[in-house]
Image (cartoon, rainbow, N blue to C red; front, side):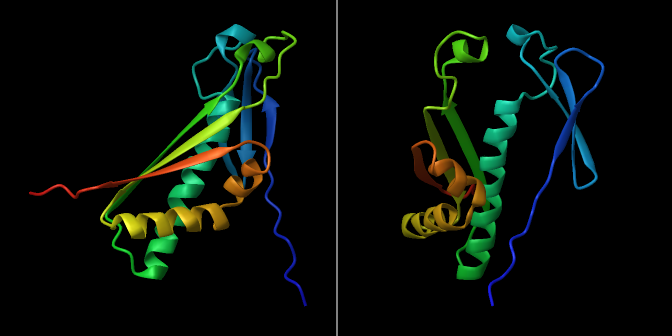
Length: 151
């Protein structure tokens, strides 16, 4: 018997401020703005920020869990994500607005380089955000093992 799929949901609605939406997911709410170039107030994160943050946080949590499961000493993790796109497409110019490339850097404190690579492999195979985006755009993953701070 196969396991049924889980379903995640989110919704957004206009807030009454041009270029601003209120997003709701699982009873939590946050504000997303359009950038100023699209008439938004640009005071909160924008939809592209949300996408990059989703990849970053999913990687953080997957690495944390995998490190615990594999007995890898993980004293700290910071995941940086960058995406390249042509903003002219968002503004209506006839160019592809899609993200053309993503770069992920796993900044790990505690593990060896080999253990860091094992965590990157767990990220590649277990993160649903990575798995979905990797089908659409190349994603480069860089592992940086950082020496723990001495007190």
